Image (tube, rainbow, N blue to C red; front, side, top):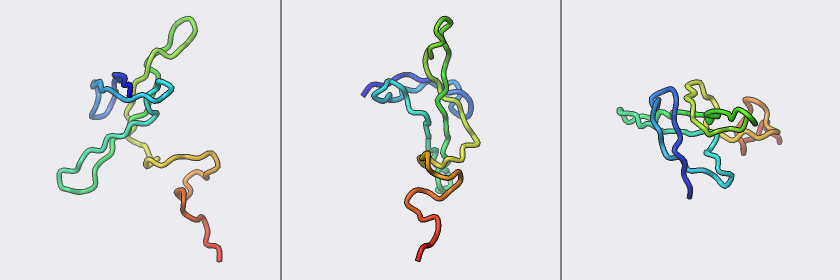
Amino acid sequence: MKSQDTPFEGGPMDGRVLPVMVGPTGHPPKTYRIPVPDPDGGPPTVLVYHRVPRGHSRRLGLIQGWKYQYDPDDTSGGRLRWPWSKPGGAASGEADDARG
């Protein structure tokens, strides 16, 4: 697999550059989640970073690269959002109402 050195901005990873695997299109994932273990043995804290353009070219406005920006208020919980799902609805595989 191919990887790309991608900078991180904000949060605990601010200023670091990590190699991130790119997909078949050559882009890194839209969301990058980093689980941080709890020192007391509780559930891990998950740091969420979203991909944003690093810069644009002057003439054509093409994206020059990607970086990850910290999102402390992420509430997606790592679930996929389908176009036909209701906002804030039940997770996939769960029934919305009980049918007898």
